[in-house]
Length: 399
Image (cartoon, rainbow, N blue to C red; front, side, top):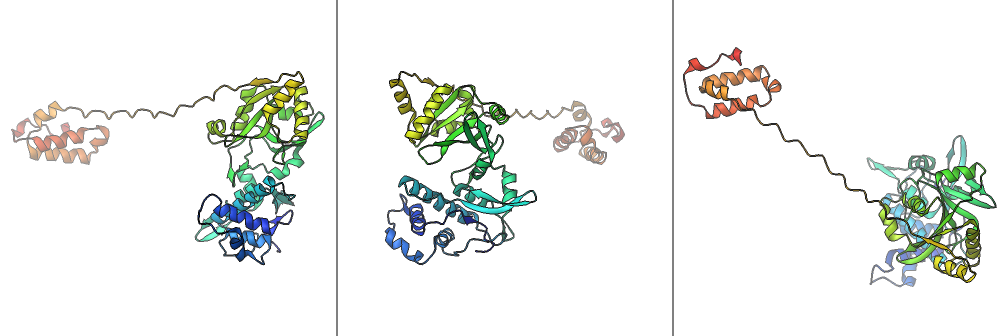
């Protein structure tokens, strides 16, 4: 469609889109779900893209929004992202020969017009940034969203490749940039450079993830190959082994902290993602890359075991526990100063009429501001006083 907000790099598979919508809507959620065949009926005759938009908008439309015109609302954007992420998961799990459903959005880079490549999770994050005011929905141009959120887009990694000796590292996220994870969630800024090692593909079909401290990143970028230790971690997912991640850092704590830096709660990284660690020499790092090329889903335990059969010992390392930041304790609120006693007033002001004149004087002369508590004292005296000799009462000017 002319002027469509986004277009897919590769055509989507209609049957897989509908299946992904079905899985997103019903899998493990509703026991009374229809059969997949029955669910497909409303989508008959639709293209894959039409089916995607139809699902995301609950049947309200089939067309991709145009630039600057009637964008999806946040809920619709989230549904669209969920289906594309499920589409990707099904293709990966069943090893279908199918491209990831990435899109391109036209935007500006300075004076140039360029295509911004977005993964499904990044597309979801962008579309969810829609704002509504006075019933009108608006979506910022893609370049403004990227700049405002400091997003490091995965699709730009190949344009930010650095040469580290014989290996190339495609940098997705620079130090200080955010990442988009899950279904459009924007992380905290990363305190590291993050990317993938070219030519080394892990079990999920992506490049081997790598983290570099800002100092090491700048050193490699300037032309100095890294020669220090390489840390490797077994990432976990719901208690099961997931992919491996490596880091160029001085020690395991630094590697752990780089990974945890983008999490709202670093302790959640430890709880949900962190697995075993090992520290490798540069030679052993070369062995690891070779092992991954042979067995993309290899685990850290398997790699260590395989190396041991060759007479090579891999050093297991464990980070120290994360520092627990104590909750801020509010400063105690100082007690209000006591109301000053006024024995002289009690002694001299015992006639209600005179007290009231004195009260009027205090109010008129704004003595309350200059003598905190004085007005309260006078009010209490007026309420409690009994008639007495007027001659004992001082003049107003003596107050």
